[in-house]
Amino acid sequence: MKIGKFTWPTELTVPLLLSIALHLGIVVILFAGFKFSPSVPEAMEAHLTAPLEDEAVPEEEIVSAATVDKAKINEQIAEIKAEEAKREEEIAELERRAEAAKKQREAEQQRQRELAEQQRAERERLAREQAAAQQKKQEAEQAAEAAAERRKREEEAARKAEAERKKREEEARRLEEERKRKEQEARERAERERQLQEELAAERERRAAARTRQIQSEVGKYTALIRSTIQRNLITDPSMRGKECKVRIRVASSGFVISVDTLSGNTAVCQATQNAVFKAGTLPVSKDPEIFKEMETIDLTVQPEFN
Image (cartoon, rainbow, N blue to C red):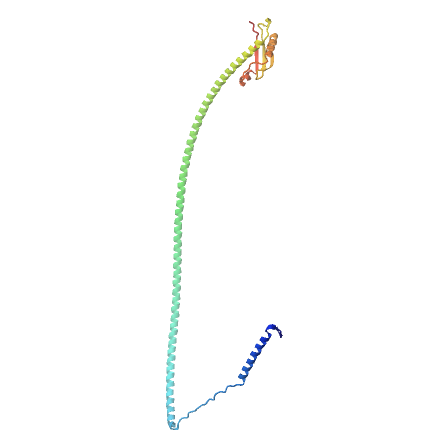
């Protein structure tokens, strides 16, 4: 259902319309009762009470009373004015006193402010002086500490310098002693080395001489063996008696004959010698390389032997 711009749900339309109609009816009834039942205000009565005739006041008494009342009123007014003047004078006095008290209070306050300012200035001065004194004290203490520290450092530096000097002197003395000791050891070592070299040289000479003698002996021995081998293979005849031939024989380390060269001598003897060497083929040599080196090339003189 749609009413104006509003759309009502269909299931709520009938009950809702009944409820609205009922409430509108009740409102109309109440409004009508209020409209047509005005309230009636209650009547108010006023009663005036007049004085009784037997109580009336005579006119003379009224005039006398009025005169007396006026004099009293004037007197009262005068008293009131006097009282007001007195009060005004008291008020003025109080105001003067208040003004004097105010001025005195202000003067006292000014004096208190000046005193407070003086005290503040004095406190500040004392504080500055104390701060300056404290600063000077601190500076003096710092200067004393610095001086003490400087003196301590100087003393420590002097002590270290002295210790260093002594250390250098001790080191120099030790180095000098070490130098002298090393020089002495070097001299002694050189002397021992010289003596040892002399001994070694002498020993080498002795060994060389002994070796030379040994080699010569061995060479002589093997030379004799070679000569004997040649003599065994030598074919002679009487015409060779008293004659000789000098040859140069070269052999290998095994004794194998490499070559035979005639150096000088009788031709027949030299030919017979070469034939004897080649016939032998191998000659006796030493297995010692040093001895063989001396026998690698042999110059040999051969003389035929006759029995």
